[in-house]
Length: 330
Image (cartoon, rainbow, N blue to C red; front, side, top):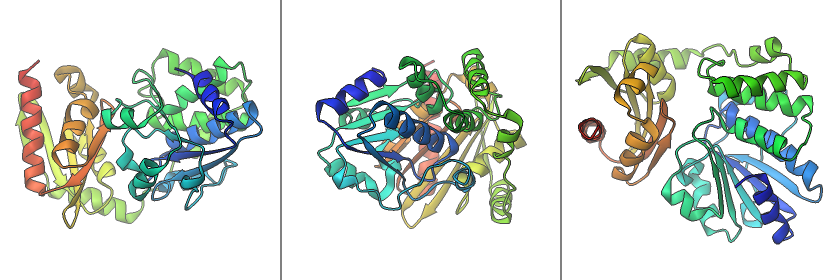
Protein backbone atom coordinates (compact mmCIF):
# COMPACT_ATOMS: atom_id res chain seq x y z
CA UNK A 1 0.00 0.00 0.00
CA UNK A 2 1.32 3.42 -0.91
CA UNK A 3 0.23 7.02 -1.41
CA UNK A 4 -2.18 5.98 -4.19
CA UNK A 5 -4.10 3.87 -1.66
CA UNK A 6 -4.39 6.85 0.68
CA UNK A 7 -5.63 9.25 -1.99
CA UNK A 8 -8.04 6.59 -3.27
CA UNK A 9 -9.49 6.26 0.24
CA UNK A 10 -9.87 10.03 0.53
CA UNK A 11 -11.50 10.19 -2.90
CA UNK A 12 -13.90 7.35 -2.13
CA UNK A 13 -15.51 9.34 0.69
CA UNK A 14 -15.00 12.77 -0.92
CA UNK A 15 -12.91 13.85 2.08
CA UNK A 16 -12.40 17.55 2.64
CA UNK A 17 -10.95 17.57 6.17
CA UNK A 18 -8.07 15.33 7.24
CA UNK A 19 -6.40 15.24 10.65
CA UNK A 20 -2.70 14.34 10.95
CA UNK A 21 -1.65 13.20 14.43
CA UNK A 22 1.84 12.69 15.87
CA UNK A 23 2.88 10.87 19.04
CA UNK A 24 3.35 12.61 22.38
CA UNK A 25 6.47 14.76 22.68
CA UNK A 26 6.67 14.65 18.87
CA UNK A 27 10.25 14.47 17.61
CA UNK A 28 11.63 16.00 14.38
CA UNK A 29 10.86 12.84 12.37
CA UNK A 30 7.18 13.03 13.29
CA UNK A 31 7.02 16.80 12.76
CA UNK A 32 8.96 16.70 9.49
CA UNK A 33 6.84 13.84 8.13
CA UNK A 34 3.61 15.62 9.08
CA UNK A 35 4.73 18.91 7.51
CA UNK A 36 5.78 17.31 4.22
CA UNK A 37 2.79 14.94 4.03
CA UNK A 38 0.34 17.78 4.68
CA UNK A 39 1.97 19.78 1.88
CA UNK A 40 1.84 16.81 -0.50
CA UNK A 41 -1.87 16.20 0.16
CA UNK A 42 -2.52 19.88 -0.44
CA UNK A 43 -0.78 19.64 -3.83
CA UNK A 44 -2.43 16.37 -4.86
CA UNK A 45 -5.91 17.23 -3.53
CA UNK A 46 -6.27 21.04 -3.18
CA UNK A 47 -9.84 20.62 -1.93
CA UNK A 48 -8.65 18.90 1.25
CA UNK A 49 -7.91 20.91 4.38
CA UNK A 50 -5.47 19.35 6.84
CA UNK A 51 -4.89 19.98 10.52
CA UNK A 52 -1.85 18.72 12.44
CA UNK A 53 -1.69 17.84 16.12
CA UNK A 54 1.01 16.46 18.41
CA UNK A 55 -0.29 14.73 21.53
CA UNK A 56 0.91 16.54 24.66
CA UNK A 57 2.83 18.90 22.38
CA UNK A 58 6.09 18.66 20.44
CA UNK A 59 9.54 18.04 21.92
CA UNK A 60 11.73 20.98 22.85
CA UNK A 61 13.82 20.44 19.73
CA UNK A 62 10.73 20.21 17.52
CA UNK A 63 9.49 23.53 18.93
CA UNK A 64 12.66 25.07 17.57
CA UNK A 65 12.10 23.53 14.14
CA UNK A 66 8.54 24.84 14.04
CA UNK A 67 10.03 28.33 13.89
CA UNK A 68 11.53 27.57 10.47
CA UNK A 69 8.88 25.19 9.07
CA UNK A 70 5.65 26.80 7.80
CA UNK A 71 3.29 24.62 9.81
CA UNK A 72 1.10 25.11 12.86
CA UNK A 73 0.10 22.56 15.45
CA UNK A 74 -3.46 22.57 16.74
CA UNK A 75 -3.57 22.42 20.53
CA UNK A 76 -6.92 20.63 20.37
CA UNK A 77 -7.41 19.20 16.87
CA UNK A 78 -10.96 18.70 15.63
CA UNK A 79 -10.78 14.90 15.75
CA UNK A 80 -14.55 14.50 15.90
CA UNK A 81 -14.93 16.44 12.62
CA UNK A 82 -12.21 14.56 10.73
CA UNK A 83 -13.18 12.55 7.67
CA UNK A 84 -9.81 10.74 7.65
CA UNK A 85 -7.31 10.44 10.51
CA UNK A 86 -3.65 9.83 9.70
CA UNK A 87 -1.21 8.68 12.39
CA UNK A 88 2.39 9.57 11.55
CA UNK A 89 5.39 7.97 13.28
CA UNK A 90 2.88 6.60 15.80
CA UNK A 91 2.52 2.83 16.01
CA UNK A 92 0.52 2.54 19.23
CA UNK A 93 -2.71 4.37 19.92
CA UNK A 94 -1.65 5.09 23.50
CA UNK A 95 1.12 7.34 22.16
CA UNK A 96 -1.70 9.80 21.52
CA UNK A 97 -2.37 10.24 25.25
CA UNK A 98 -5.80 11.69 25.98
CA UNK A 99 -6.62 11.81 22.26
CA UNK A 100 -6.53 8.00 21.96
CA UNK A 101 -10.13 7.49 23.06
CA UNK A 102 -11.33 10.26 20.76
CA UNK A 103 -9.65 8.53 17.81
CA UNK A 104 -11.15 5.16 18.78
CA UNK A 105 -14.60 6.74 19.02
CA UNK A 106 -14.32 8.39 15.60
CA UNK A 107 -16.06 6.86 12.60
CA UNK A 108 -13.38 8.26 10.30
CA UNK A 109 -11.02 5.72 8.67
CA UNK A 110 -7.56 5.65 10.24
CA UNK A 111 -4.37 5.54 8.18
CA UNK A 112 -1.01 4.66 9.79
CA UNK A 113 2.29 5.77 8.23
CA UNK A 114 5.22 4.56 10.30
CA UNK A 115 8.63 2.91 10.31
CA UNK A 116 8.34 1.08 13.64
CA UNK A 117 7.37 -2.53 14.14
CA UNK A 118 3.62 -2.55 13.59
CA UNK A 119 1.40 -3.17 16.62
CA UNK A 120 -1.55 -5.61 16.31
CA UNK A 121 -4.00 -3.32 18.13
CA UNK A 122 -3.14 -0.42 15.84
CA UNK A 123 -3.47 -2.66 12.78
CA UNK A 124 -6.99 -3.61 13.88
CA UNK A 125 -7.90 0.06 14.24
CA UNK A 126 -6.41 1.15 10.91
CA UNK A 127 -8.11 1.06 7.54
CA UNK A 128 -4.70 1.35 5.87
CA UNK A 129 -1.22 0.70 7.31
CA UNK A 130 1.93 1.73 5.50
CA UNK A 131 4.82 0.49 7.59
CA UNK A 132 8.44 -0.22 6.70
CA UNK A 133 10.96 -1.16 9.37
CA UNK A 134 13.80 -1.20 6.87
CA UNK A 135 13.88 2.58 6.56
CA UNK A 136 15.44 4.86 9.12
CA UNK A 137 12.54 7.26 9.55
CA UNK A 138 8.94 8.03 8.71
CA UNK A 139 10.27 10.94 6.67
CA UNK A 140 11.83 8.43 4.28
CA UNK A 141 8.43 6.86 3.69
CA UNK A 142 6.90 10.28 2.97
CA UNK A 143 9.80 11.04 0.62
CA UNK A 144 8.84 7.90 -1.35
CA UNK A 145 5.30 9.26 -1.67
CA UNK A 146 6.66 12.30 -3.52
CA UNK A 147 8.70 10.04 -5.79
CA UNK A 148 5.78 7.68 -6.44
CA UNK A 149 3.59 10.58 -7.52
CA UNK A 150 6.41 12.23 -9.50
CA UNK A 151 5.96 15.41 -7.45
CA UNK A 152 9.01 17.67 -7.37
CA UNK A 153 9.97 18.62 -3.82
CA UNK A 154 10.02 22.27 -2.83
CA UNK A 155 12.94 23.46 -0.71
CA UNK A 156 10.67 23.69 2.35
CA UNK A 157 9.34 20.15 1.92
CA UNK A 158 12.88 18.87 1.42
CA UNK A 159 14.07 20.66 4.56
CA UNK A 160 11.29 19.12 6.67
CA UNK A 161 12.20 15.62 5.46
CA UNK A 162 15.94 16.25 5.82
CA UNK A 163 15.54 17.29 9.44
CA UNK A 164 13.50 14.21 10.30
CA UNK A 165 15.95 11.84 8.62
CA UNK A 166 18.97 13.52 10.18
CA UNK A 167 17.42 13.30 13.64
CA UNK A 168 16.37 9.65 13.47
CA UNK A 169 19.70 8.52 11.98
CA UNK A 170 21.68 10.44 14.63
CA UNK A 171 23.10 12.75 11.99
CA UNK A 172 23.37 9.88 9.46
CA UNK A 173 25.38 7.53 11.70
CA UNK A 174 22.61 4.93 11.26
CA UNK A 175 21.96 5.75 7.60
CA UNK A 176 22.24 3.09 4.92
CA UNK A 177 22.99 3.64 1.23
CA UNK A 178 19.32 4.19 0.35
CA UNK A 179 19.00 6.81 3.07
CA UNK A 180 22.08 8.64 1.84
CA UNK A 181 20.73 8.65 -1.72
CA UNK A 182 17.52 10.17 -0.37
CA UNK A 183 19.49 12.81 1.50
CA UNK A 184 21.42 13.64 -1.67
CA UNK A 185 18.11 14.21 -3.49
CA UNK A 186 16.93 16.49 -0.69
CA UNK A 187 20.11 18.52 -0.95
CA UNK A 188 19.61 18.75 -4.72
CA UNK A 189 16.11 20.10 -3.94
CA UNK A 190 17.70 23.07 -2.19
CA UNK A 191 18.56 22.02 1.37
CA UNK A 192 21.72 23.60 2.75
CA UNK A 193 22.96 20.61 4.76
CA UNK A 194 25.40 22.52 6.97
CA UNK A 195 22.95 25.23 7.96
CA UNK A 196 20.00 22.85 8.38
CA UNK A 197 21.92 20.41 10.60
CA UNK A 198 22.70 23.27 12.97
CA UNK A 199 18.98 23.49 13.73
CA UNK A 200 19.26 20.10 15.46
CA UNK A 201 22.00 21.30 17.81
CA UNK A 202 20.11 22.22 20.97
CA UNK A 203 21.91 23.13 24.21
CA UNK A 204 21.09 20.73 27.03
CA UNK A 205 19.00 22.26 29.81
CA UNK A 206 20.16 21.95 33.40
CA UNK A 207 17.13 19.81 34.30
CA UNK A 208 18.09 17.28 31.60
CA UNK A 209 21.67 17.18 32.84
CA UNK A 210 20.44 16.54 36.38
CA UNK A 211 18.14 13.76 35.15
CA UNK A 212 21.05 12.07 33.36
CA UNK A 213 23.26 12.31 36.44
CA UNK A 214 20.50 10.98 38.72
CA UNK A 215 19.94 8.06 36.35
CA UNK A 216 23.66 7.27 36.49
CA UNK A 217 23.63 7.39 40.28
CA UNK A 218 20.62 5.05 40.52
CA UNK A 219 21.87 2.37 38.12
CA UNK A 220 21.09 -1.25 38.84
CA UNK A 221 23.44 -3.25 36.64
CA UNK A 222 22.53 -6.76 35.52
CA UNK A 223 24.66 -9.01 33.33
CA UNK A 224 22.64 -11.14 30.94
CA UNK A 225 24.90 -13.48 29.06
CA UNK A 226 27.84 -11.29 28.06
CA UNK A 227 25.95 -7.99 28.03
CA UNK A 228 25.55 -5.27 30.63
CA UNK A 229 21.96 -4.13 31.10
CA UNK A 230 21.51 -0.89 33.06
CA UNK A 231 18.21 -0.20 34.84
CA UNK A 232 17.41 3.19 36.34
CA UNK A 233 14.57 5.62 37.04
CA UNK A 234 14.10 9.39 36.84
CA UNK A 235 11.10 11.70 36.93
CA UNK A 236 11.68 13.12 33.44
CA UNK A 237 13.97 12.82 30.40
CA UNK A 238 13.93 9.02 30.50
CA UNK A 239 14.97 8.73 26.85
CA UNK A 240 17.87 11.14 27.29
CA UNK A 241 18.97 9.30 30.42
CA UNK A 242 18.88 5.96 28.58
CA UNK A 243 21.06 7.38 25.81
CA UNK A 244 23.49 8.64 28.41
CA UNK A 245 23.78 5.20 30.02
CA UNK A 246 24.61 3.68 26.63
CA UNK A 247 27.33 6.27 26.14
CA UNK A 248 28.72 5.34 29.59
CA UNK A 249 29.15 1.74 28.49
CA UNK A 250 25.91 -0.17 28.98
CA UNK A 251 24.89 -2.47 26.15
CA UNK A 252 21.22 -1.98 26.95
CA UNK A 253 19.65 0.79 29.06
CA UNK A 254 16.12 0.70 30.48
CA UNK A 255 15.00 3.88 32.26
CA UNK A 256 11.57 4.29 33.82
CA UNK A 257 9.58 7.22 35.05
CA UNK A 258 6.78 6.73 37.57
CA UNK A 259 3.86 8.98 38.47
CA UNK A 260 1.55 7.34 40.98
CA UNK A 261 0.96 3.89 39.46
CA UNK A 262 1.65 4.97 35.87
CA UNK A 263 4.95 3.95 34.29
CA UNK A 264 6.73 5.26 31.21
CA UNK A 265 9.79 3.29 30.12
CA UNK A 266 12.43 4.26 27.59
CA UNK A 267 14.88 1.72 26.17
CA UNK A 268 18.07 2.18 24.20
CA UNK A 269 20.57 -0.40 22.94
CA UNK A 270 23.96 -0.24 21.31
CA UNK A 271 24.43 -1.51 17.77
CA UNK A 272 26.85 -4.06 19.23
CA UNK A 273 24.12 -5.45 21.51
CA UNK A 274 21.58 -5.75 18.71
CA UNK A 275 23.98 -7.55 16.38
CA UNK A 276 25.15 -9.97 19.07
CA UNK A 277 21.81 -10.72 20.75
CA UNK A 278 19.30 -10.27 17.93
CA UNK A 279 16.94 -8.58 20.40
CA UNK A 280 14.72 -6.04 18.63
CA UNK A 281 13.73 -3.63 21.42
CA UNK A 282 10.39 -2.60 19.93
CA UNK A 283 9.15 -6.06 18.98
CA UNK A 284 10.87 -8.33 21.52
CA UNK A 285 10.90 -6.20 24.69
CA UNK A 286 8.73 -3.07 24.55
CA UNK A 287 5.67 -4.77 23.03
CA UNK A 288 5.40 -7.64 25.56
CA UNK A 289 6.31 -5.30 28.42
CA UNK A 290 3.52 -2.90 27.41
CA UNK A 291 1.06 -5.80 27.38
CA UNK A 292 2.26 -6.90 30.83
CA UNK A 293 1.69 -3.36 32.15
CA UNK A 294 -1.78 -3.18 30.63
CA UNK A 295 -0.61 -0.50 28.25
CA UNK A 296 1.28 -0.51 24.99
CA UNK A 297 4.85 -0.68 23.76
CA UNK A 298 6.81 -0.58 20.54
CA UNK A 299 9.62 1.07 18.66
CA UNK A 300 12.83 0.42 16.76
CA UNK A 301 15.50 -2.23 17.10
CA UNK A 302 17.75 0.16 19.06
CA UNK A 303 15.18 2.55 20.50
CA UNK A 304 11.80 1.77 22.03
CA UNK A 305 9.35 2.61 24.76
CA UNK A 306 6.45 1.24 26.75
CA UNK A 307 3.85 2.57 29.15
CA UNK A 308 1.21 1.25 31.50
CA UNK A 309 0.53 0.75 35.18
CA UNK A 310 2.44 -1.23 37.76
CA UNK A 311 5.26 -1.49 40.24
CA UNK A 312 8.72 -0.28 39.19
CA UNK A 313 10.68 -3.25 40.59
CA UNK A 314 8.21 -5.73 39.11
CA UNK A 315 8.53 -3.98 35.76
CA UNK A 316 12.32 -4.32 35.79
CA UNK A 317 12.10 -7.99 36.82
CA UNK A 318 9.71 -8.57 33.94
CA UNK A 319 12.21 -7.00 31.54
CA UNK A 320 14.90 -9.42 32.73
CA UNK A 321 12.55 -12.37 32.34
CA UNK A 322 11.53 -11.33 28.81
CA UNK A 323 15.17 -10.86 27.78
CA UNK A 324 16.29 -14.20 29.17
CA UNK A 325 13.38 -16.02 27.51
CA UNK A 326 14.12 -14.34 24.19
CA UNK A 327 17.81 -15.22 24.38
CA UNK A 328 17.06 -18.85 25.29
CA UNK A 329 14.89 -19.17 22.20
CA UNK A 330 17.62 -17.96 19.83
